[in-house]
Length: 581
View (tube, rainbow, N blue to C red):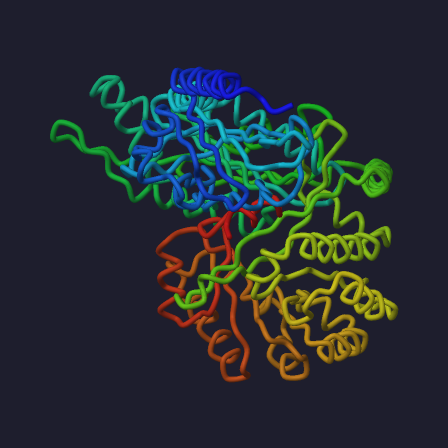
């Protein structure tokens, strides 16, 4: 029997009243609320969202969400692609949501740090008919957290890492590289005239001296290294994966910088010198005899007792007996096997920046490897790959990297479509594996990856030592359309003579030439020569270890094609490529 008109009117009035009540509730919330329809267009903003976005509701309604709600990653300032997280045409489970923290690019150009989440809006049949996004301003809490964290780990006077944080980083490095054979160095610096400045000019002058010295030393260490103030007039530098020759060069640069510095105070001037100790190490400390800090302090004391203003070295890297070293390596073999079996290998990536502006809208990156221990801490490849190579486990790791990279790219077609080339490293042992070409070919077919988007990266040394195998593998891959990059180019004696025989499209100029290119005319000449010869042979060049803007600008002047290093981007999880689209 049809409903009575009065009954219908009552139901409509009740619905309108309920709607007004819901709108009133939404309007009273301090959190911003945005709803979007299945096409991704905004159909509602509450007043808090208008305030947080700095955008009136009438300018947002019917606009694409991406134009209204603009987010970037705090670490790399790359845009976050919302469509990679909010899939509108995909039915969602009840309560499907997640909480994320990002930087909100407000429409008045004043950024906020927010946390935000989304959930599906469903009809009576349970099908998604839209999405609601909630977000709130947590800038104050975030800034306070950063401030407290910085205060806990940094020296308040110089802004450098403090003694506790330095010891923590050293301990972590020792734990993650034990038995790997990786070489590290620690420089201990004791200023020679600090006490004189304090006594003659007062503590305020001493504070100014320390701040000026700190500012001078910062640019002299590599981006990945740790410079710390560890005492009133004492500093330390932790040089990770740093061979003796490079460590001594850095220590000399630091000493010359301090020697050339003249401190001025109330028309008085002081020539400041320093005594330095450098300890070379590669294993966990067993006692005070091979603790890196104690060793560096002892070497520094020798330098001071020998007349000051000089450097003394102490090598504790070979203090372990052969049996201890073998035991440590076998321990790593077990850890690597467990990581493979328990899926604790992780893919990272590092941007390779094209120095020609028109190419910057494409993705160029190198695949890097990390291992996660059972406590969730990340272990750098320098800690476990040398052991994997010595014990013939590297082939399995290389295959895992290839298969996992292809699978990830296939699962993220937006990244794959924008990728110009993705570099994957291959070891010398893998190059000598005659079944590798068939394995790679099968992976291309299985995951439907365009072969021209993949660049295999091999070191100059491994290519020359496995020349026949390398040539065979490269020829087969070239037929498929793959590219090759020759890594660490310039370190071998036969570099140029072998180059013309290898089907290589990219030359990676060894980082030892790039690190000091601003100050060393020989490094600059070598870089120019490698770049020129590469171009004559139709190859593109990539400079590694670019760690400051001045080096980047010089490489542009020299005509280098690509740059890679901590100044461009630090290694980051593969997932961050989604945020950079």
